[in-house]
Amino acid sequence: MPDRIVFGYSFEERLDKFLSNYYKNRFSRSKIKKAIESGSIKVNGKLAKKAGLLLSNGDIVEVNMEDEESIIDKIEPVNIPLDIVYEDEFLIVINKQAGLTVHPASSNRGEPTLVHALKYHFKTLSTLSGNERAGIVHRLDKETSGLMVVAKTDEAHKKLSDMFKSREVVKVYKAVCFGKFKEESGTINLPIGRSQSDRKRFIVREDGREAITHYKVKERIGMFSIVNVSLETGRTHQIRVHLSHIGHPIVGDKVYGQNRWKGIENTKLRSFVKNFKRQALHSALLSFFHPVTKKELKFVRDFPEDILSLIEEVRKYY
Image 1 (spheres, rainbow, N blue to C red):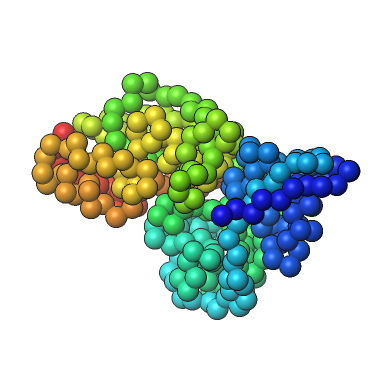
Image 2 (cartoon, rainbow, N blue to C red; image 1 turned 180 degrees about the vertical axis):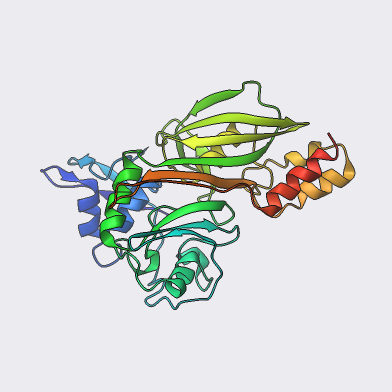
């Protein structure tokens, strides 16, 4: 059950500051800020959308956060192979493999992550996000593959974070989806929030946070479509939630896929798609100006072998 706290002061105070003081021996201010961003905190029954929301006397704050119990005090390096696309003294660009979680959390305790691998391969990583997220500027879902930028220095981390917030970083994803899109391109502008019935899922909801997704159809193959997707916002599971909501879930998505494989007539193809091990989503393009040298950097990586094999299998039947 969430904590229910009544703000009982005569003065106004920022939500994040109030909760930091209230939970000073339990949750850090950065964790509270992330909880607000992920939709885990409500004020007067509505999702809090800003850490700087001012609380007034009588406001009711609902907090739904799990204790992390000191996730990992010391993260030991683990020799996990990495596809390193670019490296200099300030940053690294990697092509992350599917199945690799980005950083340690209470839900994956004991599981080697990208952070463990980064600590093995690189002597220096930024520390702005703490030891358990060393170098991590942005994330990809565990089963999403593709391009990510990692910061070596705090200076690069801060500047990259600001660039992501101001939408100066161009990211394009590629996905294999169910169904034929009616339009060649479009924009999904629907707010996203955490599901109240399942805290691990996110859904389109009126009181959610703004979420804008652009898509462009690259190819239609029978009952499947290959699309390019770009984001204006970076909500958790945004692409997966939005595409599923408009009736085009990503192939292999066990959470938002709606079991669309059941509609495939051919038995062999139906079995292949049903057993595809992860969502067919890939971060294919990453472009930005270097935070220190100001040089324009652009990286492109096509679908990995597993998704290419999926597309090849689909082509056999259409």
